[in-house]
Image 1: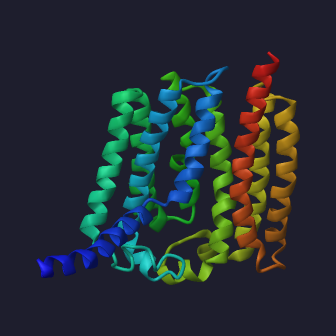
Image 2 (image 1 turned 60 degrees about the vertical axis):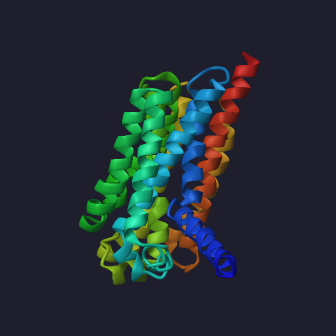
Length: 305
């Protein structure tokens, strides 16, 4: 009895530590941003409030599948992560978590998310979520990331899916409006990620990953960030042009775009070594601000109507 009593307390920290590592595979902060975009897609899909049950279950399913895709990313990229400063302490890369456990966790989360959507939401939402999962975990992570400096552009389709998934979870069909929301994220992804790639260029070069700054140099990448920044600005104006949003959204997004392009201009000039990481972090707040403005304008118009 004395031996059992002494063993249990020492086992408990390992169990807690294990759950912490499993949660670390899920990239919770990234998934939260995705779920915000999915929730906005849900809200914009209907003039009033979307059904609360569908919102909760839909976000749970999309969130679980997104966590599963993130966990697959950890497993597939473990050897690359191990040689990069930014990612070397990840659970699988640092060998704190066995590959088999991480892979089982990724499969469990992915199956649970897609199954929940098919069972409680609709089959189309489940199918699109599964396609997005495959696009990110396999097509982007396992192939594109290692094959071409345009990896983040081509693979950005999967990462841009959340608002479409949210819309389809409520309506059960694909419409032009959520595709436009996808286009905003698709255009935003290259300047967002390439800013980080510039900041961590040596890391990517050491890992042998053909990110744009590694293959084409920093000046070319800074120019692409500047150009894609303007493309992002254009896409954020499209909701007003098609009558999806009104004046309130336009005023807010113009302010956000001015700040967004100021950061991109600082990156493009190349005189400030801290500009890329500053632009990266602001771009996350920028995207949340754009989608928040869409939501605010939508319900302001609904109340006025």
